[in-house]
Image 1 (tube, rainbow over the protein chains, first blue to last red):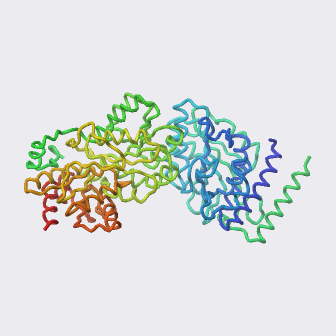
Image 2 (cartoon, chains in turn brown, orange; image 1 turned 30 degrees about the horizontal axis):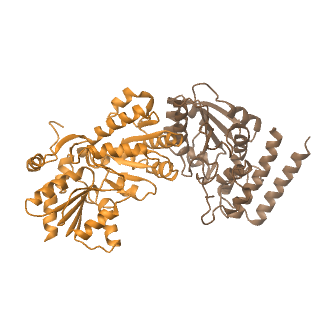
Image 3 (cartoon, each protein chain N blue to C red; image 1 turned 45 degrees about the vertical axis):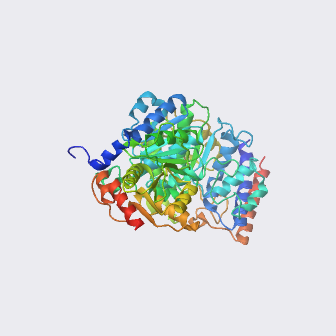
Length: 277
Length: 332
C-alpha cells in the first residue's frame, strides 16, 4: 500500500471514527484522531495479523494501552476485516461487545485495557514469552503521553531495558494534551526521550502523521538488544480543524452540525488527495 | 528478634495433636515451591515471576534449577502482575509470586483487569499471607485479600490448610486455564490429610463428622478447628470440621448441609472478619433460609494486636482453646 493510499485510508477511517462516536453518543475523539495514522500504519504495513491468522501463536501482538482511543481501533479493525463495519453502530449498546474500551470479545483485540499504565507491563510479559520461545513475533503497545504519569509504566520500562527486549516497541502518542489541559501543565513528563533512553531504550522521535517516518521506525527494532520507544509527535483531534489541539475534544462528542462540518472537511481532504497524481 | 518465634500451639494442643497422630509437615510455602519446581521440570511452559521475592517465596532452588523459567522483576508488584498476565496470554503457564499483602493491594487493578477481565491462565501466589509476617506489622499483613478478590469476577481463591492441599492446589492451578489466587503461610503445618486425599477446587473436604458444631475453617486455621473438635469430643460434643480450602467458588452445598445438620456453625479464617469466609458462608446460609447459631472467628475490624503470628492467633482466639470456648458458648 502506497503512502497516498494510506493517507486516503486514514481520512476515511477518521470519518468512520467520528461517525461511530457520534452514533454512540460517547467516545474519545481527540486521542482517536491523533493515533489513527499510527494504527493505520501498524495494521496495514507492520503487524502480521489478520482475521485468518489471529490464533497463530507467531502473530505479532498489539496491545493498546491507551484503551480509551478504542473507536479509532475499531474502525481500523473493521477495515482490516475483523468484523463487519456495520457492527460499529452497536458501540456502547446493551449486550454489545463493542465497549468503550478494548476487550477480547471483539475480534482482533489481544487484551482488555482501559485503565492506564497497564499495557506496557503486559507487553513486557508477551515479549519475554517470545524470547523464551525464540518466537519470531514482535510486540507493540501504544501509550498516551498523559498516561506516562502512571508509575507502573516506568516499572515496565525498567524491566524491558533490563531484559534487552528488542522485540518490544512502545509507541507514544505524543499529542501533548490530556483531559485537563497541556500535559506539561498538568504534571510535566518532559523530556520524554531522555527518560526512555535512561531506562535502556532505543528512542526515535518521529512525526506521528507521516507514513514514511512511522513505517521506518516501526519496521524493525531500532537497536539490537534494546526495546524501541517511538515517540510519535501527533496533533490531538488531527484532521478536523476545530478539534485540532483542543483539550476539550479529549472525549468531546460532536453535535450533528459539528459532525457534518468535520465530515465536510474530511471529504474535502479526500477529494484533494484523489486529485493528486 | 531473639530466640524462636512463639509456638502457634499450646503444650496442650501439641499433646493432643500428637495423640491424634498428626505428623508435622513443612511450611505450605515450601510445599508450593517444591511442587512448582517438580511440575516446571516437566512442563517448560511454567514460568515463575518474582518481585525480589524468590527467597521469601522459597524459589531459590527453582531459580537455580530452571533459570530460564524464572523472571525477576524487582520490587514492582504491579509490573509483576502485568508481566504474569502477558506471559499467560502468550502461552505460558505463569505463576506470579509475591507477598500477599503487596500482591493483592498494590497490584489489585492489574489482577482485576490484566488477569481476570482479560481472562488469562495466570496463577497468583500470595506468600506469607494473613498474619504470617506477624511482628512486621499491618503493612505486611493481608487481611483484606479474600474480601477484595471475592468481589472480582473470574478468579478462584484457594487457601490450602496443609502440605497435601498445597501440593494439590498447585497441581490444579498448573492444569487450569483460568485465573487462580492461592495463598500460603510460612509456618510449618501439621498434615491433616492422607497424601492420596482427593482435592478439587471448589469442593470442601470434611475432616471429621459430627452434628453438634460445624467448624468451617480455611488455611492455617483448619488445624486449630480440628484440634478444638478433638478436645470437644472429650467433653462429649461431636463436631464437624470442614476444610474450606476454596473461598471462591464457595462449596455452598457443604455449607448449607452444615447449617441444616448441625446445632451451630463457626467459621475460622486468618483474615478480617469482614468480607472473607465467614461472611461468605453467612450469605449462603441466610439466602437459603437456614437459620443457625453462627460465629465468625477471624481478625476483628480493629488495629491488629502486635506480635508474632502465634500471638495474634491466640489473642483473637484462633486456637484450640479459643475455638472450643466459642463452641461451648454458642451451644448454650
